[in-house]
Length: 514
Ligand code: XMP
Image (cartoon, rainbow, N blue to C red):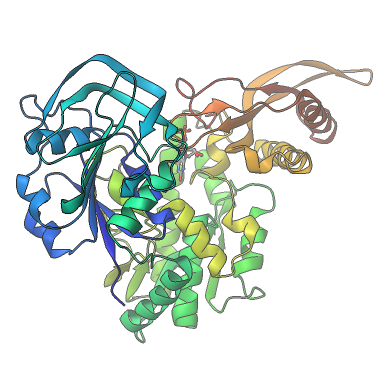
């Protein structure tokens, strides 16, 4: 079955992955490409439609990100958003200049509901604006279909040519009817069928993997996190016992986590795969002895992880395929997909591990956003507690213990964290908080316990709300819940006599507490 596709052309704006996610939420597959991508390449993909994203430039400025006029003459529907809208007007003969009044934030827009783009949208609708330039005059052939008090051309169309441009950001949730507008473009203008569904994706992927792997051997490093778990289960459904999963327990996992991973993926679990658990706690604790500096701890844990995995891989011998849990944001943020600056260098994109003897890499989740990975996980029947698990850093509790890591401190933070998580779930707050955990500070202070004076550690509770983990706000947990958590921790966890609540935003704080 051919997959219908929308191409999102990236001009470097901050919401560009959001545009792609919204399209996919409407059951239409899309991919992000830089505006530098050759037009021939885009034509060859035969997309059902093209969306031009926002971007930081002024389209009339020197060296601004641009596109060919021919893009608008392919007979393929185009929707320009913000910068993309201005660029479309600029290239096709309209006039874009600095706006007398810039618009930022939620603005009421009046739309012409007879336009295909605004079918079923309210005449007055709140939209998210963020622009300093504006379209002073639309290009010839276009008709204005939306305006605001300060923006005479908030949207335009040339219906016969399927060209649409909007100044605001329908992809941002503050645009109350934004998803409707995107849906209208996809279904009313591009005439998409909407065949991007996770059940079909999972089924097709399993089939494709089976064909590709044949009778080959496959190796997968399983961390118990969402991505590697979904990849492993998908592989196991495709090739069963030809798959070997190696799970390295570095002794820095949350309380009982190693056993939970083993219960799902081990010999008594529902999946038919070869599962190897390596209990390497002592090795990691040994290497971390006396080390206080967070970057050094991260490095040691990373290196040791590779060593342990390498030893196991040697024991297993040559394999045909190595599985990696790369997901679509990894691809885009590595600068391979869109225009985004390289935000992070990903261990799992590009650089292949040279310590495993394998012929080819398999990346079954490479096309998926995180929420799609979770949906695929549910389709595969993976337990919900695993699928909706919070992010947990690779170096684990090693970076949630300030200063030297010792086995005793690991137990303290595990116990405190388990109590904290249990109480948050009990209070029904777990779904509403992006990430929450306990971290052990390196501070000891005087306390009293019964008649005795104590000199014990302080634990810090962290809870943040975040959409993208790049910025985060402090989540407000009611005092009674915090009080209960604090009471239980100091009573139940030996070595902890004080509980602090971290009220730092990101930036300047990071989400992790290291
Ligand atoms: P920070 O602390 O940088 O974290 O604000 C942002 C998000 O990334 C997670 N994180 C990591 N994830 N390996 C990972 O897989 C790591 O080394 C790592 N460090 C931070 C963190 O939990 C948060 O969700």
